Image (cartoon, rainbow, N blue to C red; front, side):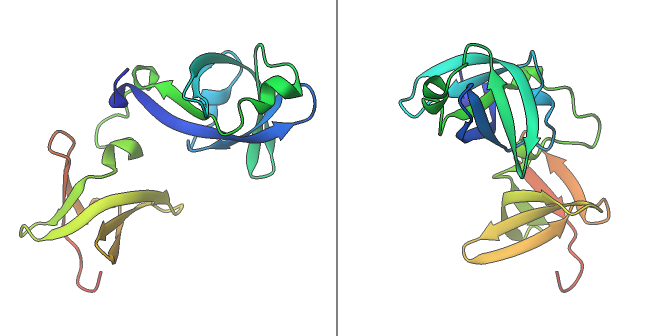
Amino acid sequence: MGKDAVLHIGRIVGVHGVRGGLKLCSFSETTGWFEPGKQVLARQRNGETRLYTVAGRQPHKKLHRIFFEGVSDRNTAEALVDAELFIERASLPDPGEDSWYWCDLLEMDVYQEDGTYIGRIAHVFATGANDVFVVRQGERETLIPAVASIVKQIDLDKKRMTVDLPEGL
């Protein structure tokens, strides 16, 4: 399976209880990927991969408790600690016009309208009002609000974003 065929959506960071519960750190904005009946691919520390069906999920502090079918005791669960979780990209809905998945924007080159290179998108985060692109070039970091007045064009095929930054940004 190619790199772009799956998306990294979480990591098992510990176990919970004696009945196979797992502590999940989700990398996804939505928890829908971890609802009962959904399937996730787990890549364990030893490189082994296996498809698991989610049997249950509960919020737990800043993490989630997740249960997989066939994982019903602490010993089996402990073998999954540090496992990275993935979903098939084909299972994602179309994001719609003028919308993108954050993972598609990471490592995208960002340029001013005059062609000046600003850097690459290293991270994206939500602020409530809008998303913010963290663009890095060497030690320099530029925070760019994801608003139409600033982001002029996103070309996924060329991995290029064109922006019109206001003075001082």
